[in-house]
Image (cartoon, rainbow, N blue to C red; front, top):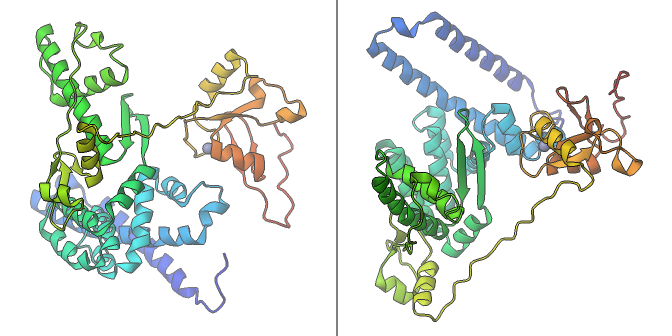
Length: 419
Ligand SMILES: [Zn+2]
């Protein structure tokens, strides 16, 4: 996107030169001081400077990431979203990029917060919290900035959550959370399995209550089996597996089988007045201790259910399993899965629901279903290739992702010694 000619580009050029200079200065300082040769007191002072330095740097990242987002530069480069683009530029997770862009979008309306970040009095996590709360209740911005000075981050998060809860319609908020629900999993560098899920607080409270009820039983089993005592969170992890697998592998935990099921009970804290009124007044809380606020509606449902007058219907999501092409023989499929563990587009690390593409000779033109002609792509990139003119070139180990030429320009010819 070309800048209008009236804009004096010398300002941007001097900004680049001055930033390059700042990078050199910081690098030179680091090269010139050996942390091992500095007193503890001086180390503390130097650390303070680095903390102070990082904050305006973060402010700059947010402001210019926002500009890239609005300019749609990411789209031309074939990324699925601005967050995806930012995650690859900064080598952070897409989740972190999403939250950075959210904050960046809010900051122009919160000049005091933006200024405090630039001056270094607020940290980035503090700014995320303040921006999220002040965007729904702008009057709270100054108070939150002041609180950030003496509260821990956790304390600030709690205050921000209360402000958001008071300022937004609970049904709307719950619907938004529900819309953004997910379950993700990944392996860490040690190979351990991690599960991360986002859901409404009432759903979370039910999960937690069920896990804790089962965990106390797992702990009893461990005692009976004479195994060394472990932390509650270890037993909760066992309990989750026992619950979701329907106890199939329950006996593998401590060598014992059987056991009775505990009825999980969620404890709700809510004022009777609020329940009678059917509405929360400012300052009243409706929450599951240890989990957080839940909509009043949830309690009404629970009470109704207990009295047999209301039926709680849980939305059941039917996720259709995406079966891989029927024409792919099992042994080819296995080899392909081993070769293309992620989407083959460079930089894309999607592993879920990968689709098989006949990348060299299309299936419609008689392309064989053989390993050399197949590649696994995520749905997003598969669609770009099928419908938007993006091309996959190279081959395993040296894949290239070629965006279509701008309208009016001839396509980039493939290399002579093409695959
Ligand atoms: Zn992909």
